[in-house]
Image (spheres, rainbow, N blue to C red):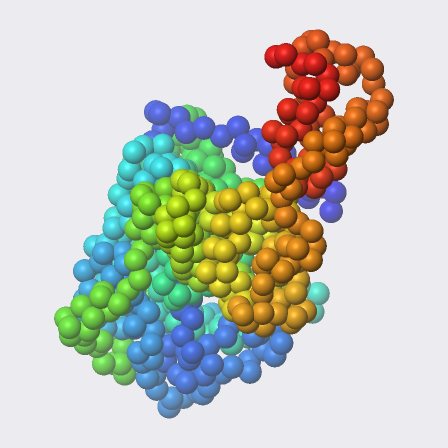
Length: 542
Ligand SMILES: Nc1ncnc2c1ncn2[C@@H]1O[C@H](COP(=O)(O)OP(=O)(O)OP(=O)(O)O)[C@@H](O)[C@H]1O
Ligand SMILES: [Mg+2]
Ligand SMILES: [Mg+2]
């Protein structure tokens, strides 16, 4: 165990110093397989739930999935619909007459003896995915990645190797689960572009709700094809997560550069090969000479997929705006969000978000923002503070929901955008301090969790503020404030510090005293009041 760890550590520290060398040009193309979240499998009526297998292997299988002789495939049109959504979002040309082909090979988890895929006439082709410097963090202003094609195909089953017993177990729950294989042109020349594309594609399939897009579970699988200076391409497979993908590319680049530098390019890099990743280096799986002849042939049992242009148009019309458009909207007038906050409302880093969808969160933000803006203008209470809604939603509310495990839609029944607007107006006017606001918001959510509040009408902000004595003290008695400040000075118990503050030697430490005041009054007395009072007591003239 220790040895494996050490080797891995050495490899990763070596990789972290990675740079691309200008005389060794990287060229890279991606093939990404994505499992579609249809209710049923691609060519049978079995339930499509490939992660069910941990509970009971081979329980989600029909006669066709296990390839009983005489069974025939029947296309599930839901997979076609999801494929269409993705193709339209990627700006592809959609093939009005695509069909299925058989790709023959023998493997235990492929009981038909062939995979049904689209080889000769794929579903969609010629798409694009633009990457932008500001949104996607690439080094050039923009970069367009061309998509060669999208094809619909079946997934295989899963093999479980039991070394000790020298047996292989087969689970066919995944067999015949619908996949989309998306193939890009070899347009990538930089690692940042590859990382950005994978993230963006993953987010797109989640956004369109066609797949969980998770790499860790295998719902999305990325194969990387790469070559240097026009030598043959090497295909990297079995890369389980983003760091494996990036590390495998770095390792493979350095391996190929060394071969070329040593003059071995013609000998070792003249024919394509497929390599895997063992956690610290790429390892050869097979070379082109040993590539199987797949004997592709059109599947005689499946009719072609015939689509009418109207169907495509109506899907295009119903497609939600793509994430780039949403980010653009959020970072411009009137919202003017930072890209970071806009991404929080748009992009899921993980599909396991159970408490809210990004669309729900965004709509909640939009409604609150407009409601707050209108109220400020209508009540004529100064200038709108445009960051107030986002700060409270993203930095406070989301944290509280996570802590208390309350779904946004539950919280929203009580804390409607209008109620949150009322709350923001109290903060806006200084009726409650931000510290009190935090306590109040958490308390409200706790009550929602305990089901003490179940509708908007039961939540009375004013009542809670007076019940818990949270209101900002606007007209504080000057004697009380003076006494509080004196007490703070006594408690600090550092004559030197106090005289340095008074003389101006340590001006910044005045803030420390004010901070103590804010703490004692829990933010209910404003900082300016303390500032004035300490200056008066200590005869400060600066
Ligand atoms: N010279 C090259 N350098 C790097 N990548 C390349 C080069 N030429 C082609 N590619 C990439 O290789 C990939 C080829 O994928 P494609 O699905 O067409 O074929 P395949 O890998 O032979 O088939 P399979 O689907 O069985 O793996 C594409 O992503 C393409 O961009
Ligand atoms: Mg391919
Ligand atoms: Mg390939």
